[in-house]
Image (cartoon, rainbow, N blue to C red; front, side):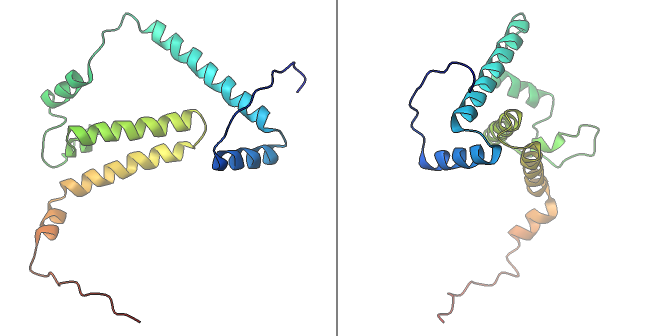
Length: 162
């Protein structure tokens, strides 16, 4: 490093230290360089976030509960099958409030990971895809009937010992 530095001690979890060492070796650098780059990226992201907050200070704040109520009144969260409409997010109607909160949390985490480059964008797409597939399964009348049908049930037997 050509710049003047200040020494500090950081305690890493063993798995993180191993990952950092491996990544530093692969990049031909040091753990210090990786940590400095990561901190720099986080600070840049913080600056960008603060700039966005500043730009949006005049916008009305909408509490999460009000937003969910709005979704209900606009019929986006009503029960029933997915209708074939122009709204490509109609499948979200399959979930209740808690599930939607979990969906938002999982999508947000995948987005943050992709945006900070700790994961790729395909992970975000996979998260959304899995939630959508779950919604389709929940709303499928055929699947519901098949799961509730007890006619063809066969009791499980204990596994055979070999």
